[in-house]
Image (cartoon, rainbow, N blue to C red; front, side, top):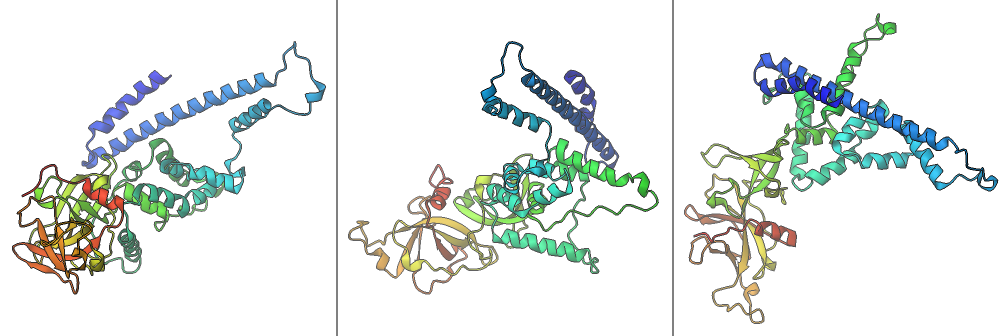
Length: 428
């Protein structure tokens, strides 16, 4: 049966690959091919489940039939063995006892173990499970595991603002201009995040049920299905997975490979691509230069902004008094006043009059702090600069750029992340 099933779905798969998604005439062909693949997958899944259930029933029937040579033991007749209890439990599971009959805590524990795609599929079973599987607590856990390291408070604020703009745009003031985006078909929109055989098939069946009224209700039109809520964590997770939401974050070594951005971290808006498991970063304009986009940004180059300071604002330094030689820091730097700040990595150095002896060093008592960027060669004009501990403001000029606020790195994880991008060769 399996070879016949594969042969029958081969034309549909070929049509799905050959039909371009950009032409309107091929859109229907692609969706029909995707539906054919869905039906074939569902048929294979049901056939496998039926075979497994039949085998389980046979084993149960064989376990219940006593052998002719065995003699009953009266003392043990009222106390079933552990093996019998296990067989009965397996038979009950094979019989398909309702999942909702489980205790509340047990059901919640089962749902916590599901992957995002399985959780979305479970939400299609019935209304009771839809409410449970859409809970923010379940999806919040998945959001923290995969996206917690790159999402900050600014991303949440922008998502809430987008929801507010969508809600206001659908009301009486719907004529307000909004950015235009390509409207995706429901197949494309759902296929980007969830498996074909579960989520898409369920949505297809649900829509089909609403389009086929029952004989008893033919005279009265059926109410339209309620639209899924967009203010849930599940909706946010799906928007991130499908690349429908550009979120603010920071990117290490922007324009990867560009020597002018080594050991820097710049603000950007990112969009996720599930097929490549990478991001597209959109950097803000630099002066008169247009905004740039960079594709193929990997996860290890993205971080959530550690501070709420916007890219064009000066950060108020609060760590200058405690900086000592050997401390690691980030400092704002920009080429000129029209550019946004980027964060650059460095290490606090010693004064020229200090020999570096830790027992005799008094650099931490000096009114100026020596900032070293050790990935530049000694003698380079980018190698070292100094700032005052008191009343520090932006300093610099159009030649060497402008230095802004300073942030001390306190954890080993932050330092090791920066050191991971250390250049192989020292820069001039």
